[in-house]
Image (cartoon, rainbow over all chains, first blue to last red; front, side):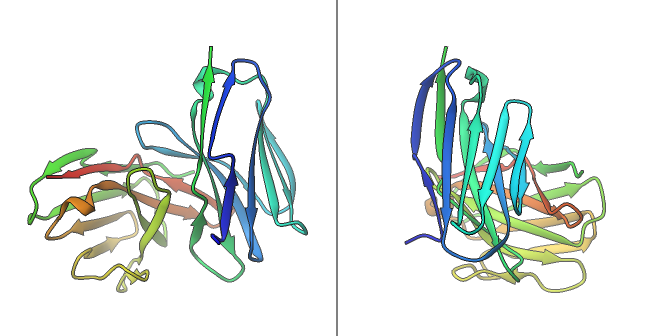
Length: 109
Length: 114
């Protein structure tokens, strides 16, 4: 079992739909990151969470430390949100990030 | 924040040759990370490069295959040596801003080995 599991692996939705991507992890962490990777390969950091909830524009990220689970929500989805969304965690005391396998999101107009 | 540039952005290489990828950061950073992303896969850490010391390699990666230089706090290179088609990947440089623990990634180098 991977340390970081994302679901779903692929998600296709219509423009305007509310999107939820889930991330579960199996180790104690100091931080969890949500990243966005566009088809060209470049990666953008969306959120870093250690507790609670963060919001940026139409994106919301939540984390439940006790349940070792995080969700990324996109409200009023748009075709430009189409990308691979990656969850990554940093274990307590570790320097490196461990990555989930990514969720490929496609928003159709 | 940190802005990272990588060169080259992409390359097509013949097997048996070597390619050096450059990573430039617009601010001084202590730790730089090199990742590989094979087709359809997520990111895998190759090594951590600290200025003034040898790079620390992850299991499965060795210095002879992926030599790294870190001459100063804003620059690093990763060489992919004696390439084979299995080395075809995106190679990404990354740095961490320890204050807010934000991770910044370069645009990646897309490598195809024939």
